[in-house]
Amino acid sequence: MTAPTVIVTGGAGFIGSHSCKALARAGFRPVAVDNLSNGSADAVRWGPLERGSLEDAGFLDAVFRHYRPVGVLHFAALIEAGLSVTDPGRFYRNNVAGTLALTAAMDRAGVTALIFSSTAAVYGNAGCAPIVETQPLVPVNPYGRSKLMVEEILADLAATGGGLRFTSLRYFNASGADPDGELGERHDPETHLIPLVLQTALGQRPEIRVFGTDYPTADGTCVRDYVHVSDLASAHVLALRRLLDGGGNQRLNLGTGQGFSVREVIGAVERVTGLPVRCRDGDRRPGDPAILIADATAARRHLGWTPAYPDIEDHVRHAAAWFGRA
Ligand SMILES: NC(=O)c1ccc[n+]([C@@H]2O[C@H](COP(=O)([O-])OP(=O)(O)OC[C@H]3O[C@@H](n4cnc5c(N)ncnc54)[C@H](O)[C@@H]3O)[C@@H](O)[C@H]2O)c1
Ligand SMILES: O=c1ccn([C@@H]2O[C@H](COP(=O)(O)OP(=O)(O)O[C@H]3O[C@H](CO)[C@H](O)[C@H](O)[C@H]3O)[C@@H](O)[C@H]2O)c(=O)[nH]1
Image 1 (cartoon, rainbow, N blue to C red):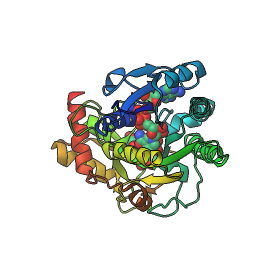
Image 2 (cartoon, rainbow, N blue to C red):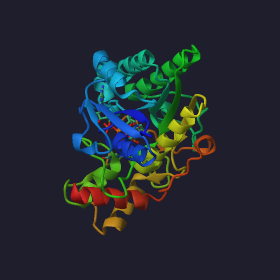
Image 3 (cartoon, helix red, strand yellow):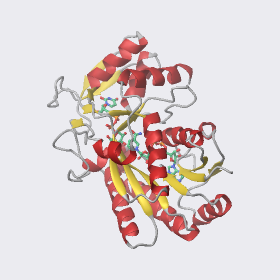
Image 4 (cartoon, rainbow, N blue to C red):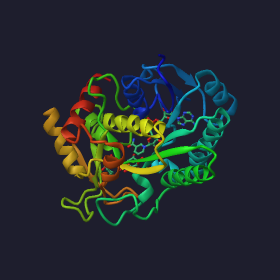
């Protein structure tokens, strides 16, 4: 029997490439659809790469016609919150209009199962922790709003009864790297904390700036819930299987339920690498909530998902192995 094909938009990116590996291991054939605006062709190793943009309807139709997928994992998006403030039009075109083009192509091809990459950014400055899915959705930048808009659009499309079924997975802070060392994080420019701290420890950057030391947290720095990229990938396989088995529409948090401050992350990097990290205390970064920690009880219950790598030192170890070699 041939493996069922799954379209993975953004399959050349960080989380998408890890998810292609997880899909292949689970018996699916992943087809990465990526315009390589922020991805790497050599991260696509578990199936073909179809290079093109979501906005290109002819391209998408040809891909769906050729591969006849059973479902779609939709990672492709612009992801830098800061850039979304200075160029919101580009974010809405890419993330919202791009998704509408994708769902239209799915509709034309008769493909109904969609797993969407949402984010904790849909909660904005959440007043409490841990965050449950029913918390108010008040994103504070165009990036978060673009993701919330897509969540609402998917719910509206599904409500027509036209066939679309979706799971929106709200990831907290994706981190780590493939434990086998085959894949890792390669954003350019890199804005995420763990890779920046590691690159500092490894002498690839002069210092790490701590964005704010006066937050209402134990050590004054922001607290985040770091979820391992391979755990995100396995959640996607579980969510896809659930939809293919006839499961209903859902919006689920993905996080470990544990929070680590910026200083704790720096400490973990120093412990794991045995190298000192040069830090400089700086001002708050606009739009950063003090604390974001997930309540992922619903993902546990509905998907049977349990993070295999809850320990932040594993995230750092896997990412360090990747950056030591990348
Ligand atoms: N990294 C995180 O911490 C995090 C947290 C929450 C949510 N997310 C979401 O997860 C998804 C994946 O994030 P990532 O960190 O892997 O990002 P990434 O930039 O590594 O991957 C995104 C991929 O999508 C591609 N892409 C972008 N726009 C496209 C388009 N219009 N057509 C075709 N390809 C396009 C890029 O080339 C890139 O390879 C994104 O939707 C992001 O918003 C990420
Ligand atoms: O050089 C740096 C970089 C980051 N930070 C701090 O480290 C924490 C984590 O920052 P990241 O940039 O790594 O991640 P964010 O929490 O800003 O955002 C990530 O998680 C969000 C959801 O929680 C969104 O999905 C977003 O796309 C994704 O990048 C923040 O408090 C930030 O202020 C620093 O102190 N110095």
